[in-house]
Length: 109
Length: 114
Image (cartoon, rainbow over all chains, first blue to last red; front, side):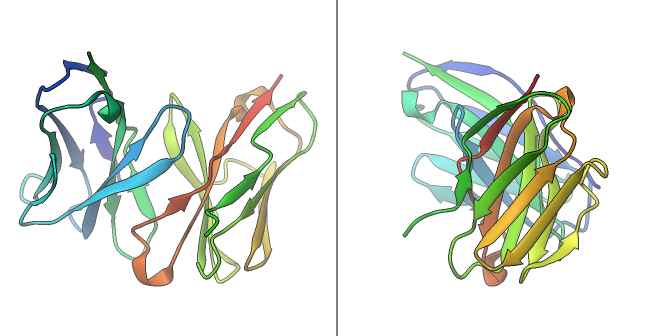
């Protein structure tokens, strides 16, 4: 199975900061990309899809670079409630999703 | 609507015992996935079903693990005999065939084998 690599962190940032996570994937045939969020001791939940043109959802911006095979997630104006683990997820086609191990974010007051 | 339901939420058992984890997917979803999550290995796909049929079980660690889906609303993951290295959080997830990228996870079963 192909790999999805993420910096595990933790990223410790103050409230209001901007923080960015990157993720690389090894399968160049990967077709679609997502970020999931997992709160401590909870289940993963879909945060947002990642499109080639980039997409924004409030304070969150996701981007895809197919040539370099990486995906990014930018969080602006961090809130305490953003503290969680962010999982980079890749769909390689007619197979289930491939999850990265996650990047842990801690937003500090 | 109820989400994915898993039981039990916590299980503590002794090495060598049989463990059965249960899952009820979201009604109408035709894909069901079993995952295991540990700090070291992250989220690992064990097996998945489509319309109650096992499609890929290559992630099942060994013969001690087995999974069934007797109908569209119920699945089990069984470990027999259990070992301490099986300690992990086991998640069940389901999705609709038309949108397989969005998987809905259950709350997980935290298994501890002593």
